[in-house]
Length: 326
Image (cartoon, rainbow, N blue to C red):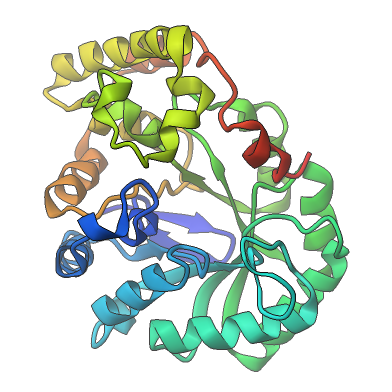
């Protein structure tokens, strides 16, 4: 597989997101941890070197699974994880906390669960409005000096926050949602990342599953699936957004690719500093997704995808949108 560069970190240009391994879309009872581990092993065999997780996933469960899966294979993988959505002294999981003391506690837990002496890429999961980003960046800088972290990342940060953090500790990567139905980063965020030499890691590159072409109705979701409250999967918005999928499906048919592979191949045309992390806990899906590395779109096909109508509806509900740095 070809590689991408995230600041000074080189990773496979298609990674693996481990969020769903902790039951983000599906209840705990439906999880198969052995299958998740097999999925990570298969990804590594296919050339994936970039595994993304976070302490809040589970909470803690995703990191434990990743740690179990990479045991004995640590030299083959770049592990990214995140802090800041678990407060270890004042609120627990779901409480934003990027104070230096909390980061100190968080990193020790992540290192233990991941079974590693260092984290390749350590992200602030969400910007903490109550903690200056300079304090957060300085705390991670100290961890880098100590060798516990190699690279610093931000997630869902605004241009202003990126610049302020980067002035304290160089940022290697920004993680933000990006796909054929979420393209806001193209206007301001991507130009600033390239100005500063920061790589870009798109999460949800398959539109929370919609761009796979396998979701045709909201009834396809179990009752506890959070997508049932997402504005893009509701009513008329959902019907409009299915039209995006139909064009992706049509182009995929022209080149013998699935909709998911086509959507990922489109992202890969956007630069060698972009490394999407499609998430799955299934071997078959990781095989499908990584095959996008070999797909070549014509310029005419890229132009058709570029011109698709933007997705209808906000990308998150009001509560989740309020957590995003603006």
